[in-house]
Amino acid sequence: MKMVFRWFGEGNDTVSLDQIRQIPGVEGIVWALHDVPAGEEWPMDKILAVKTAADQAGLHLDVVESVNIHEDIKLGLPSRDKYISNYIKTMEKLAQVGVKVICYNFMPIFDWLRTDLHKEMEDGSTALFYEASKIENIEPLELVRKINENSTLTMPGWEPERLQYLTGLFEAYKDVTEDDMWENARYFLQEIIPTAERLGIRMAIHPDDPPWPIFGLPKIIINQDNVRRYLNLYDSPSNSVTLCSGSLGANPDNDIIGMIHEFSDRIPFAHIRNVKVYENGDFIETSHRSQDGSVDIAGVVEAYHDIGFEGYARPDHGRHLWGEECRPGYGLYDRALGIMYLWGVWDSLQRRANV
Ligand code: CS2
Ligand code: MN
Image (cartoon, rainbow, N blue to C red; front, side, top):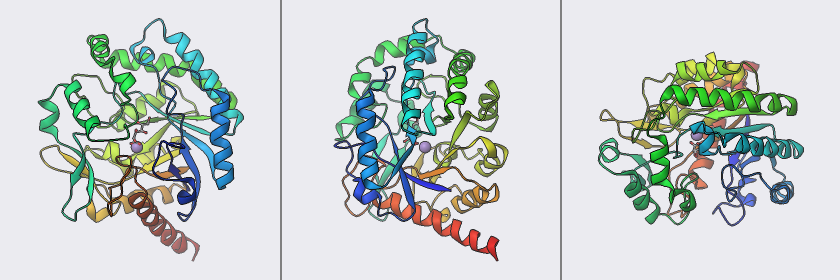
């Protein structure tokens, strides 16, 4: 297991590379050019600037999250070919600086979605929270406005410049079915995977978060059957999955440990975090500890250990602790604590295996 840590870039993150390098066992950053709109080719000078900063901190940049997919690709519009060609050019540049894994998602319009970014927990910390009834009773635009109001740093995928097109996007998705999404995903994979193979890059789809349809938008990467179906759309090690225990774990029917075993050779990148799910469908992001949430994180780590996992792993989101002001879900403290939990479980399994 190679530990990595998400970093949003200079001036775009409250956490610094100097802090990241002090977290035990962290070897690299998970990064992206967050200011480049989806669909545009990433400029080499900006890529190199991240590389220089990472090199100076002694961290690698093997994992990119995300190169976002333009909506026209997900919608299957004729203009998709132009955006796919830009995507391929970005892949080629990333390979030049040594990138090995590119995480991306195939969610319509939104990236992850919550109703409250600072839900107070009993111990006084705050965390990302999803209240099912709120989603059912609010217009998407209203929700996004409310959420951005309470946050100084925008969540990835929720950038204001994208959101101004929200109404038009909903219109565009009106008649798009799940079958259409599958077909559009297949087309995308067929175009990009041969390049990924040639470059030695593993494309790793991130599951939808939450893993069910919201606002009537189709969702496809939501459970074990669908991950299998996605991997079978193009049978290649370069078509792989970012197994996110938190996203998939929001649905208690999802057997994360079973997925780690089934997809063992197709998981180059693991997102590990816990989530507590309530009977009414609400969920909150908790500490990594198994006892604190609904996902058995110790069991998840054990499963990775069992399959001899040699891929990259990162703590996914964390709570906001000790008064830390940070990007929602992406503070330093709880993610660093999460890493120590993951190492604690991993190292004790390792010792036992070595006896
Ligand atoms: C999220 C997402 O769960 C997560 O990792 O923070 O924003 C994720 O980075 C994207 O969906 C991946 O494309
Ligand atoms: Mn994730």
